[in-house]
Image 1: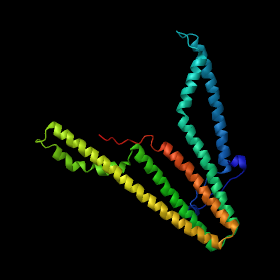
Image 2: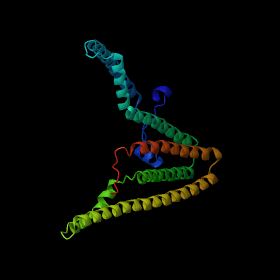
Image 3: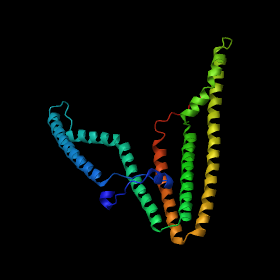
Image 4: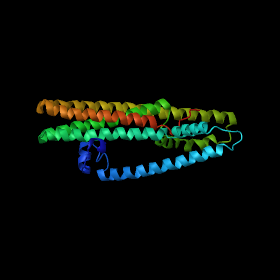
Length: 272
């Protein structure tokens, strides 16, 4: 981004980044990027040379194989396997590139706001608007993740560990010798179903709580925006709104990526 657009944003202080809910930096300095590019180009050329040598060796060895295998078919199969294995890596790389652009844009929008020379009251109201927006987006992310957990029946490990501890008090009773095998199996199944249902009932209640929190943030955001409209001219108000909308776009990309990758290895809850 810096090499293409000649934009090299300096680092900001931790307090500034925290106060404005932005990243501290969205990249590295120019000389580090240039050094890294030179290293990558050398590595890339070395890899190409090694690949050409391996292809030549493969074509030579293929002439002696029985039965004969067309080297072109074998190379295509290898390429397909490599591309499939690198799919997640490419997705992660594309995501980081998009986030880099959005982070850069976010810093520029903050700078444009301060270029308009707002007074202290306007600055504080703008920060409150962005703060409420950030809180609302975080709560929305929690809501989306929780919805998908409920849909996929994949629970947070903390729920499993906490609630499953209740079985520690039940297992000695189930081990009582007066219970025959069939009755014990029936009781274990009933306990399992009850505990599983309780977990999801609790998650549903958490979802309702998060939705109430989102509505609360939305109301506070509306109140701050109304105050802004009374003390800011149209240009300044739009500058604040532009940054707020950019925060929303960044959140959309973030939550989409999170939902696509967060549950890949999450264990499913089995309802026996």
